[in-house]
Image (cartoon, rainbow, N blue to C red; front, top):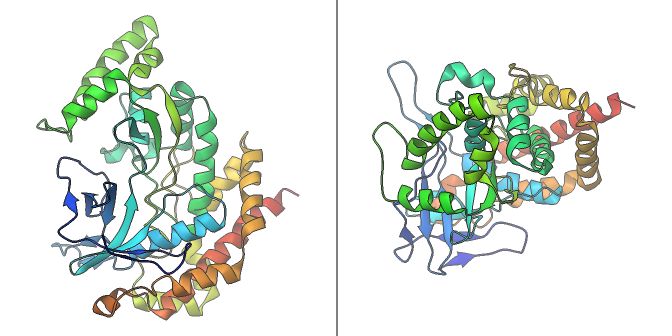
Length: 370
């Protein structure tokens, strides 16, 4: 397995060749093109390319060319500021460049249970694929679901993740973009094994199909015996830990075209407006709010101390020069054959300005309460 490494902190460069084996049985969530790969070293990796939206009758095509860099930069900044975050490196798959991450779990002993499964086990009427239910994806439903099935520690991790998203401007922290790592139970292991081999028409997987049936049973049991939580724990007990923060590519202005990059770099007012307009995917009391409004609401809640603690930690580690160094040299290992994937200098400057301004806004929120 060929890799190139500059130092211990900056990303490695992987070359995916015929020695890597794609695992077609494994289905991946999310919107970007992904591959689940077995590497020559015996480890499993996810390779993701940047999202591309083809042209349609009503909309022009859109190429989020630098999206994978946002994932990698977010990792480097997250580590600097003390967040538990999944490592992302650079990878080349033929003509395509993207980001790559090692699997977070030992597939023989563990499973990654995405947030959506907890939300649906808590409320079997909740359907994230129904646009009418988008307002129901709130901090409150996450809080209640974790109270039902967890020991409460994961709620602090959700808050920490919200602070990180505010810092990088991530607008896509949907139900599949956070998770809890569990030990296998007998039932969950059986589901996992069967899901790898069978697909049910009308459902994304057998797991979804059986979950649908299970939720119907639980709903009736809840009304008659009030045992929904206990029944659901047959599937989702033995949580080990909240998963590292992952899938943060929808951040750092990844969607901006070059003309907009230039405008935001040159105008503080335009950059302020852009940041103000950015919304959190996690709603507050049914309303879609921007990242800083969400954090202000958390500061006015019982989560005041954990929010302050995370922001104060970020303040203690934040170093604009280190952020600048990360961004400026992030793509230095890109070979000549793929130089068109390098980040333009003006976009790098915008990323630095963006992160710095977002940090200032986080610090201002803390100062408001003094």
